[in-house]
Length: 157
Image 1 (tube, one colour):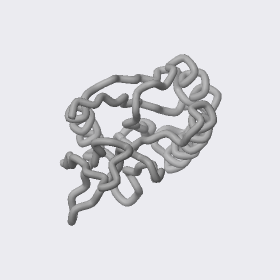
Image 2 (image 1 turned 60 degrees about the vertical axis):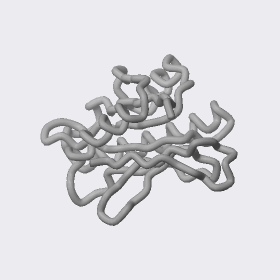
Image 3 (image 1 turned 135 degrees about the vertical axis):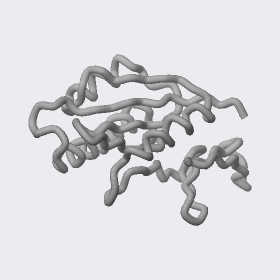
């Protein structure tokens, strides 16, 4: 299965709160929630995504989002800026194996005691998270129309 995905790196601009405060994470997730609403309006349906919050020891938290390709970058930058984000949005198109590795390394710096990973919960999603014991993985459905929902599992180590 050689599907490609886009991994976005979204961060807030430092204005409005001190770096590293709990308030910065709350503002980041609030801006992400609003961006999802704008994306749903723009695309005509709710987007599929997996997100990981990276909380570095110094500085503000950063949101990494795995989603399907096809988002217009100029619109995304303009909307994220309006929500209080930084101008430097990075969007890399990559195969699923590389995207999983990218998200895995971000999970190790995600911080303790808070929700650090999540996914969309649409009925017709072709990507999502699954837990097997203490391990977390990403599932990719082979086809959206598959009634058995056969999927490939990629563990996040």
